[in-house]
Image (cartoon, rainbow, N blue to C red; front, side, top):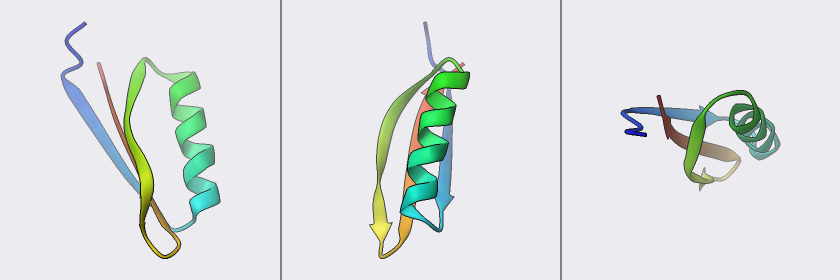
Length: 50
């Protein structure tokens, strides 16, 4: 599979970041590239897929 698309989501809560990351991985054919805090209280999720 080529995995030609990327998606980046920035959230204002670490807890919300965990929830969104979990929901995306369960609901879509995506692969987690990066999930981490980017500053105090902010969370970033980067995925790739089709």
